[in-house]
Amino acid sequence: MLGKLLKHEWKATARRYGLFYLILASITLFTAIIHAIPVDNIFYTMGETSLIVIYLISLFGVIFCSTGMAIVRFYKNMVSDEGYLTFTLPVKVEQLVFVKFLVAYIWQLVTVILCVLSLFSVFVVGHMKLGEFFDGLSYLTDMAGKMVPVFIVMMLISMMYQLMIYYLSIAIGQRFGNYKILASIIAYCALSFAIELVLMLIILGIFGAVGFMEMAESMYTVDGMAGFYLMTMGLSLVVGIVAYFVTCQQLKKKLNLV
Amino acid sequence: MLKDGYVVECRGLSKMYKGFPALNKVDVQLERGKIIGLVGPNGSGKTTLIKLLNGLLVPTEGEILINGIAPGPETKARVSYLPDNNYLSNWMRVEQMIEFYGDFYPDFDAKKAYAMLESLGLNPKQKFKTMSKGMKEKVQLVLVMSREADLYCLDEPIAGVDPAARDYILRTIISNYAEGATVLISTHLIADVEKVLDEVVFIRNGEIIRHTSVEELREKYDRSVDALFREEFKC
Image (cartoon, rainbow over all chains, first blue to last red; front, side, top):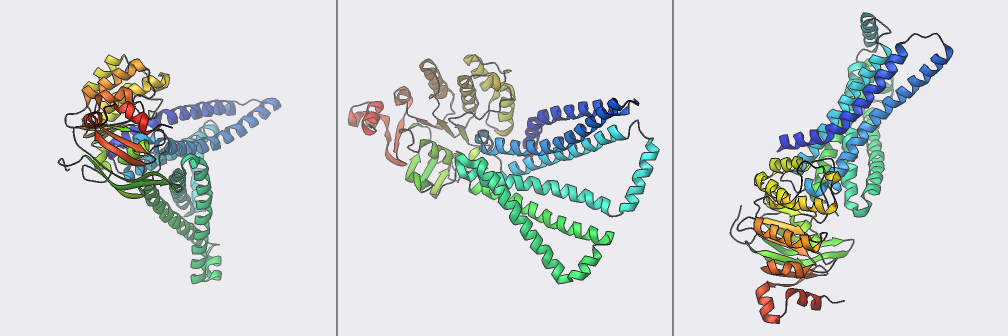
């Protein structure tokens, strides 16, 4: 059943994301061409600069919309009218939530990768030799040291954590019948605040156990900073996993499709 | 799965909404192979009971069993549900939904579905967003009745259709449900449905006030179910 759920979830989401990526490709191509044309004219340069700003805002918009689509998909297919079909399928709730999460997560990853490729296309292609680019990248990577893989792990875990918090908020909000959207928003705000508070208290507790001065000094080293970020991401991972199980529990024991 | 005994058993079943009892200590058993009308005025608890049977709501109190087990993936594989609202994804075509049903329900008969669509004059290649409300309801009915389920739960199957289509829908239901299965039809349009019913369950304010065979009802009260309903539930 998991395979079938995945198949249909891909089909249902691919059409929207596909269109989305087509728009991203069009914006990238247009911006890359304009940016690559060497015109020595102040008005052209001003226009090009404005276009670059619009392009960068668009990239943020793409990432924002990608998350938005994942949230809307979960809401529509699970707790609005389509939920009447979803929750009468002979599958476990855990499978439903897992598939929604997995497909949304992969789409978000694809979106990030495509945005990076887009930036590469606009700012590197036609402006520097590939060898120069990779030399520069290698230099930055050497400078940053451990922080590069740490930031990548942070991004991966942060995406997972955020998705699960959105899903949990919707799972809580659906308990409130005709006010489920408002309740979901309130649940999200409350959960975000509560989780950040608890995480901060845990981190302060760890700092206190090790010694504030020792911890503060270690933060000036790359190893120390990397260790700190990995610790916070580890806690976020645990919260994300707990959020998955609580989401399933809410949809199994407290489902209220009205 | 238990095939002897009742297909549905409710014991002390209650569902509360903000202190208001949508269902109040309902005890009811539904036998196999019967067409049962669940009749009551608007707000009496018909849809709440049907949603509980399908695991879309969780009871506040009591127990609900389908083929002897609580609602879950196993019971959902044996229950075919027609809700009183549209659940179809607008972007899909009819044939894609048929494929979807075929993937998840082993008892789904796609050939039967296509045959019913043809007899209803519906195009399998049409997208739901281009269909009228009535057409979507017919497609939903086709999907539900193309399964060989133990229990069919039809929530107001004829409420949104014209009188001419009602007879056709009832004939479709009667001629397409699996042998030995139970059909539970929730409705307040009793006059139309009465002729196909074996049993009737009267529900008011979340409580079952009568559960009897239609024949017994007519013999005892010398009135149609519709006439008795109007008397019982007159405002």
